[in-house]
Length: 251
Image 1 (spheres, rainbow, N blue to C red):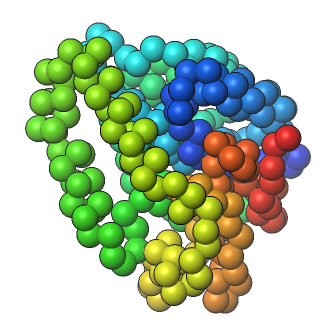
Image 2 (cartoon, rainbow, N blue to C red):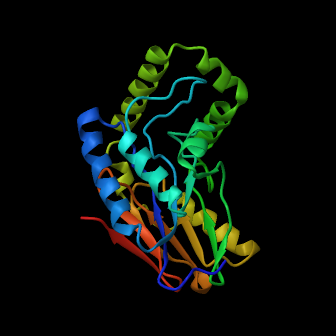
């Protein structure tokens, strides 16, 4: 696909709206909306790479309360003809048909490999890729199973969403600041994933979220692994202008 002259593609992830509480989440949501407003004039496509919400589950007739400013802005962008891609994250893998139907986004449940201006991309959230972390990979299969979704839907929303928010906060507390550390090429699972993929074929840009750490890492043969970071701490994003990919920050 060819990007029109003067247009750009933007990538952001890990907004985690809803965390750690409604007050601080609202401040972050308003900042994200301002960022979207600042890029809409030259945005060709926008990629939201997962964990937009700290937790999300769509009951048949009920969705989690809040986040209306972001949802309204995204609907406004797609109404203007700007394509918005939305990826499942590990915190919001239970986005079903409401977000695509109401907001007009294109939902992706796994990685995709588009081409822009002759550059090849591999794009995804990034969870469960690379070696190791077998415990999480097993849990991910369980949560993505239809039976798990059916069973959770049997819970009253007040209880189900409340319980999920409790465990999500507990998980973040136990993780602490671990996401702010770059562990090195040998221990970064996404880098190892990229190197394995490069053995099969050349990819110009590997684009992921999930790590909560802005990363611009040079791979062999001119390839790059870039991570969009997060909006809890860094307010970081990636932008492709048709020729180059850059890591940027919204202040």
